[in-house]
Image 1 (tube, rainbow, N blue to C red):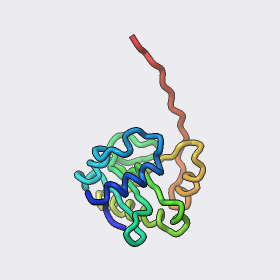
Image 2 (image 1 turned 120 degrees about the vertical axis):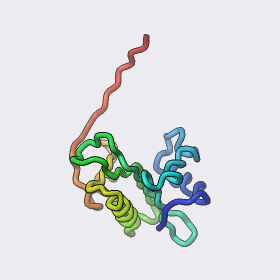
Image 3 (image 1 turned 180 degrees about the vertical axis):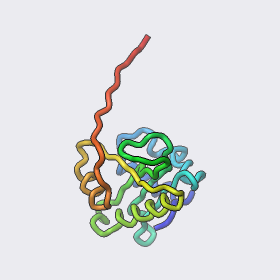
Amino acid sequence: MRPAREADVPAWIALRLQLWPEEADVASPDDLRAYLDEPARAIALLAFDGDDAVGFAEAELRTDYVNGTETSPVGFVEGLFVAASHRRRGVGRMLIACVQDWTRERGCTELASDALLDNTASHAAHRAYGFDETERVVYFRKRVDG
């Protein structure tokens, strides 16, 4: 396990595409730039089995309000993925532990995350990693075209 490097971008993108197949910009190297260029504010970690990337975690410091937290800034898990062939082996737990250490090193006392309401597998994983559910939210939008 280690922070992502420029040479890791293709493998990292391949993992991101598995987590977010519907996201248009998930494969854009520009989308990854903050994680590579701003290590004080963002981190991307990759887990390897030999030379193969088998998981990743992306985290950022958030200074805006983060639902369910009491402090600012907080570390926020923006993405977490472990390849199906490597799940239930502690890879996700190790990634979260590294993100937690990174968050603590930046003076934060809270690490937050989110998951879609219907993603019960993610809810279970978060609980297994020691997260407490704080609230559930449904967002709404209304167009106000002129």
